[in-house]
Length: 146
Ligand SMILES: [Zn+2]
Image (tube, rainbow, N blue to C red; front, top):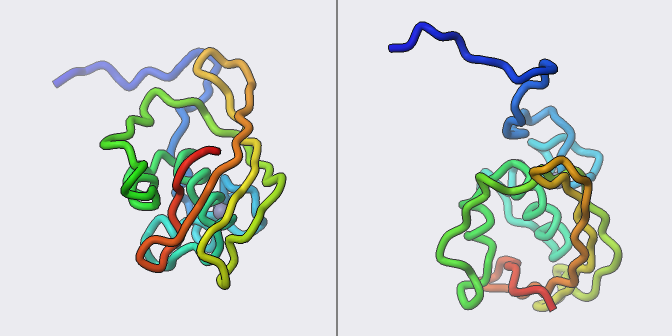
């Protein structure tokens, strides 16, 4: 047992924590709180109804480091065996730029987006991606960047 108290970082900034507060703004950028927005997808209470909502919920899962959700919404053919988000960047925002298909009436869809993040060194950066989604057992899953 250590007598040392937990040390805080200089400047008083608390360490980043999971955005699991249901009232907190959802990391995906929609106006609903996390619990009503992507939180219920992460909790398995509902499935994302469109490819865009799946994309948003996967971005939010990166932000709250929900590895299980990310692997569970990845097509089995392209899913990595494991995913380590511990050293990942801090995700700071998502812009959906374009979508094709991906609705309740489609079985395929694409989402073009820019995801903003702060690299571990503190430098703001962003990632542009055109992602392909399909239905697997009825639910939208991420296939790959195209
Ligand atoms: Zn959301």
